[in-house]
Length: 177
Image 1 (cartoon, rainbow, N blue to C red):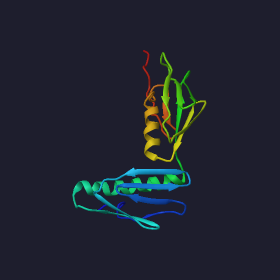
Image 2 (cartoon, helix red, strand yellow):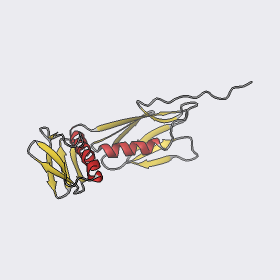
Image 3 (cartoon, one colour):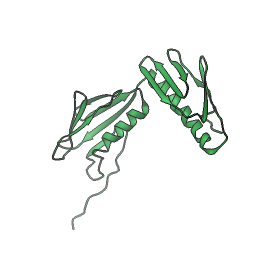
Image 4 (tube, rainbow, N blue to C red):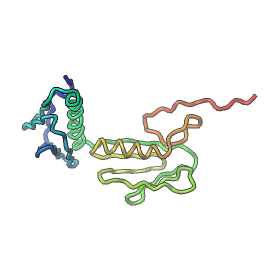
């Protein structure tokens, strides 16, 4: 039995949850999120609480039970307060800036790297601090990971893009005799 899945999910004031078929829509002060769920889990939306139950007692349904509960909690939290991730760009000559709907990076390559900013994401860049925020936790996390993958931090000088709370394990370089 899933410990997360069997708990009731409270709907706070100011948040409206509606269900039509397999689509669950959460509306709050910051925006609206919709997600399609499989019919292996029964989602019951009440006036102030959401309950999830499994239809079949197989391994796949049990694994979806807690996952769907976590997705619904993240949707409710996101429409109240946006999720935020921060990246730090370290290295001489490395620059980042937002121009219109695109990120422009100078990452030591022979060309600038241009990454479009998707809908639902608010991105800012002050000097070498990049802030990405939005109401969809999955979209914020995947977009931040995609940007970080452009120039991962290296262990010798620590150059590259790292998360705000990430600690890079440094290695000792070559020793001269």
